[in-house]
Length: 401
Image 1: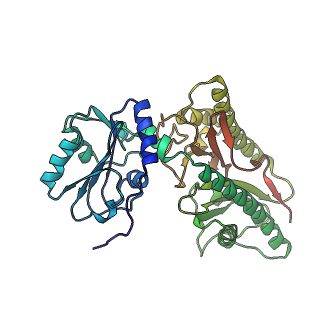
Image 2: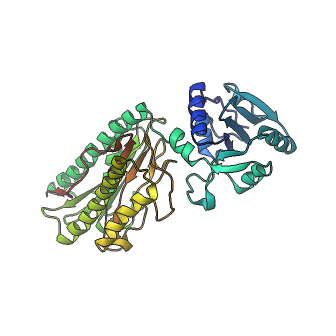
């Protein structure tokens, strides 16, 4: 039996912020549920590890928070700032849940209608059925998650900016390394360069979640290509090289995530240049659209930003080759729990609120031929979007050989 030394760490200051948000959203409470780590949002809000028994935590818009916890697993709740009600049997759990929710009209929970946003749909259907059997209605906690869980702190933003600077520097150094090796008569592989990049990122102070994809020409046509220690391609003259790299400084820091394109030679072929301009312009159109909406004082949603980028790439004749969403949420997780820039894989109807971050990364993928992507990160501020990637790529990097 595993015994954890970690205890719940939700503070009274954090609770006060949550309660203010609940009142603003006209919700009675946020009901957090987890079992063995299936809802990392709940454990993240509470500062808990994955526990071996079910728990419910009621964070009401007013009053004292209440936890419903199993008798065998009390140590993690020693630092709990509210009331702790202990259950033992499944019957006492169900009775305790009815008593916990007595007088409530609706509660926010990590669910989304018809699994519309799977990143948020963390609570099993059977648990929702159990909750609603008490007469309470479950509402999606999407806006709460964006505002409280996925919003960057000042420290998170500063850490992200340092990571973003390191990623750009290492990506450009990697392109230079390709040129150096070829001029010296050596041909490195995608795997070799991936290993070098991750080592450099570690030297830059990125110690968590660090990795990179290096894909040459046709391999870049696979959006989720990953080079292996054996069988990865050599990087040669005339190759188009995609470098996707990411990482963060610590477990509590915010990720940075970027993709850069380089061409091994003195001039980018016309065909590749046409593809590149469609990708770059689609990327920039997304940021311009968000900025215009913010200037006008209008709300902006993830799905409509995806439409802007997708429509531009379609107008250029490459819509069928853009086969993933425009961007993903970024917070303490690389693919975070906030709004995604997506109206393809899902229809993300969540609003882009100040304090949340995300990627913008359109791509064009021609199987067996070539693939291109440009990825930048964006932080929403009160006045509009801030592109956090230093000097976003405007032209394909020429690797002189």
